[in-house]
Amino acid sequence: MARKELITKDKILETAFELAREEGIESVTARKLAAQIGCSTQPIFRVYANMNELYTEIYERAIDSFGDYYENFKSDVDMPFIHLGLAYIKYAKEERKLFQLLFQSDNRGSRSLYELLNGKTGAVSREINHAAAAGCKNPSGLFMKMWIFIHGCACMVLTGDYDLTEEETIDLLGDIYKSCS
Image (cartoon, rainbow, N blue to C red; front, side, top):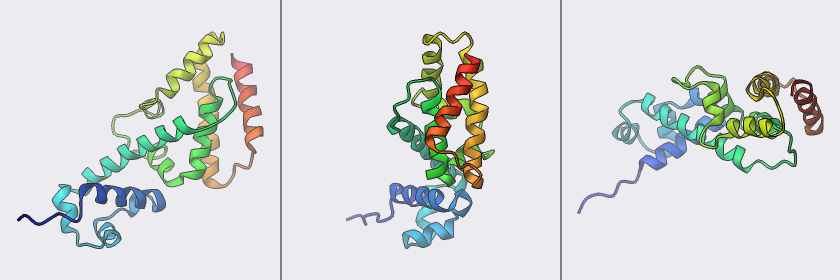
């Protein structure tokens, strides 16, 4: 009878993802991961040819994490781009290390920031369509203007320089939307 594998690919990926979420992707090393799992590095390299292969899967999982976060984010704001902005800023606050991995690293491969945001949810496309339906003449241009502000706010969250309340953030985003639409 074949020996049952105790250290599965799912276990390795789950542990690696949680390590990246808590400490950052740079903390995901074979030795540290093996110690977290309670094994040698051999099971890791039996499943993954190298650490870059594992990092790619962690990154894909982080993309899904943001997509799920956005889809489940609740707000009562109906103005285009504000819901996405609030979700993005709050994600930076609640998932600092994953935010840095996704939106502040050069490990995006060939993906643009737009592609990451739009992801599997179509978030940006939906917001642009919402703005067009609301009468905005240049919804893509408006998105770009708002996005610069939204991304700046999220980055300020990471440095501890963003102290606006959600209501103040909504007001600012609303002002930008109204001035540009």
